[in-house]
Image 1 (cartoon, rainbow, N blue to C red):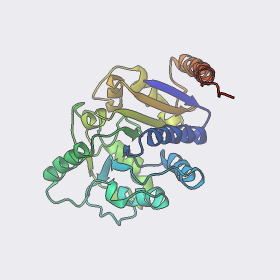
Image 2 (tube, rainbow, N blue to C red):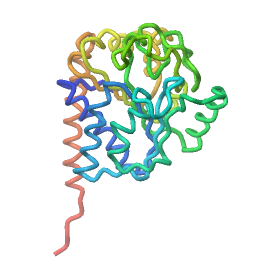
Image 3 (spheres, one colour):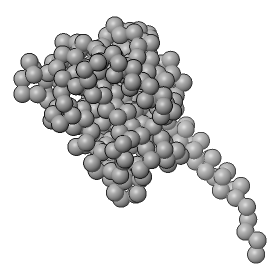
Length: 274
């Protein structure tokens, strides 16, 4: 797990967007797993800027979103389908046929969840999965107690999650109680994972999932078992990390190594014949 501590939300968003950009550049037909909520908004804004100003090409990219509220149609202004269209998809050149967001109106939920898993496999699996983290340590809607081997399924939302998400609805009673979500096991099959978090409210849970034990009580802790995870935090979210100084030192040393590698690459370039 590579922990990257940034100065603030804006820098966190830029660093996260650069990791996603690197993935798209090295594999134009990348399969991306995407997240919703307030945290990734800055990352999506930066990706839109990269598309418009730098020509970042999404035309061959395929996406799978983590989750969707049960009972909300795609047109509902609080559905995650609507969120993704408004905050990313309609601003970039992605092929709508390559976009996948769980269907909150599915009638055969079990059958639909199986279909969603199969679609991910048919696409070749997820290359890079973007995640946020809930205040109770959940990833996607894998609430505390979820199996660390779980697959895409219907999940009952925890009371704390309902309260956290109530700010997006007129009333707390309007927040759906169920959601279709990728499972922890599904997420762990991504080739690379990128988790972003900001703010003091996420500091305790970030310390717990990064430095605490692997436990179903904090489903994000399962990321410790994955070989390729980037965790990008702002200073506030990193404020309770016991080994924060070490993570900063690692980043400094990696930057030095990157500089040396660039120099070696330059020195190895063939000399042009006169």
